[in-house]
Amino acid sequence: MTNRIAALCLAATLAAPTGLLAQEAEGSFKIELNAAAETDSGNCRLTYVAENHSGSALDQTEYQVAIFDAEGIVSRLLVLKFGKLIDGKTRILQFELPGTPCSGISRIVINDNSACIDAETGSETDICMSKLEASSRTSIQFGI
Image (spheres, rainbow, N blue to C red):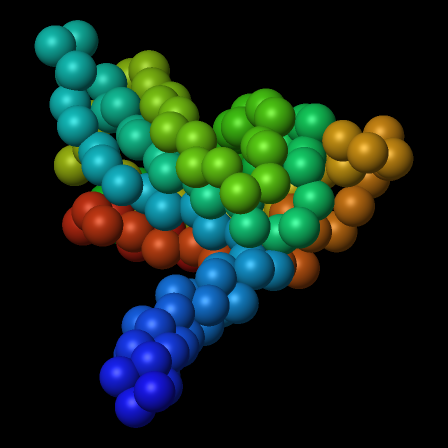
C-alpha cells in the first residue's frame, strides 16, 4: 500500500508543473520578432512567431506598426497582416520591407491593431491589444 501512495504522490508532483505552465499560457497572446535577415536585394526580412493562447480563435488579425530608422525617427507606418490565428496554435510569418536594410531599423512599435475579428462571433474583439505581449530575439527592439 505504501508503494501505491508513493507512486500517486510522485505522479501528482510530476503533473503539477505541466498544469501550471498551461494555466500561465492560457489567456496570453504573444508576438515575437524572431529573426531579421538581409535578402540578396538588400531588403530586411522579418520573421515573427505568433502564439494565440487567448481562448479565442481569430479569423483576421492585422497590426499597424511604426518602423524607426537607425536615428530613432519613424520612417514608415505599415500594416502587418497575420491572418487567421487559431487558439492554441503557433504561427510563423515573414514580412519583407522593400528598400529597407535591417541595419536601418532600430525598433518596431505596434501602434494599434487594424483588425481583430473573433472567428466565433465575426465581430471585432480587443484581445489583439489587451492580451498582447511583444518581444524580440533580434537587435531590433520590438514592443507595444
